[in-house]
Image 1 (cartoon, rainbow, N blue to C red):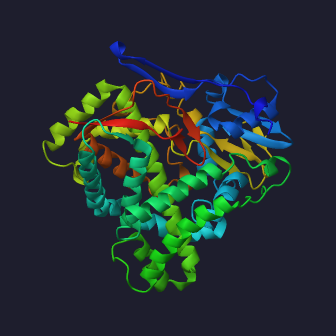
Image 2: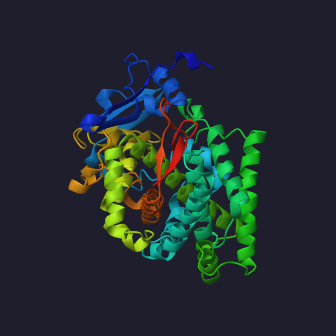
Length: 470
């Protein structure tokens, strides 16, 4: 309804192979009439990536009022530090949109919890996925990738697949074996993957109730289809947790560590529902975001063969004919840079929004209680003063120097930085190396890639590719 009032945008993609310049797909700058905030809101409901003007891509803090609600966009590293670190307790609460969108699925899971619940569980979950534990999961990442290599080999050279679906299956199996300690198997992993995909498609991008004066937004309308998606996910995760509580779990899995911690510390109150919420949160964050990152990486490499050649040469130099392992990751500088540049161009969660608890002041702007404070990695990472030629795919920028603090935040930042950062980063680099050692993926000529932001950032309809053995 009223969608026809939304501003029109187009997707830009340019390739200049002789000059080795590739500008991957992104929406054109917003060009709606200044002051028409209703049009901008309707555009955001259709496509959140298309509401940003060229003037928003500066190191500034801006404020607008929409239907009486103050909205503040923070795009300065110094101001971002103030929000996520200096005054994080005032800005720790996720927005009504995010809470309402995810609470039915994740309950009080770490991603959307705040206050005492967050303080109590954050150290617990952070310890479970701590960077020092990542090497223990290296073989799972490598071996699961090799299983995908075998399946792709059976498909034959030139076979067509959807890269998003393939990467979702890969990361779902990796996180299943890491979180749950055993194979979910293709059918159950697929059910969870499909459940998350369906759930995302059914969630509105905007909670209109928040802009109509309800500080906590309006509850999610639970359609029969939405209920089925959630039940599908909960049924599988509940069974796994109950098996663990009955002593059938793998001693090395993340869920088993949660169970043992609860037995030692009953005050944590991690009952079956709480365990499911944290397991579902870890699964969603670890599966969905890495799948999207790898999918975007294949798109970028497909269009920039000069970068792909550098990646292949590096894998040959570091690994020879051996399968890349987690021990090789620190030496895979180009693979790492490709993943980091992918995360810059296509951050899995392109909008980090918070709700102010109390009145505050960000930069020279006064913040009202319950205001929407938005940090937008999609915009921040494409700000020219922070990243020259920001729309170009240039992985070497991460080899040459590190970004300014708080200018590059694909995993958020401050106390609420993603606890699985090192797990996800290592997984993406290693999976890319194992698969790129054996295959080239090519996006068909003429296929139009369009980024779409729902709960995460995906290419619309996935990413069709053809597989070519190396």
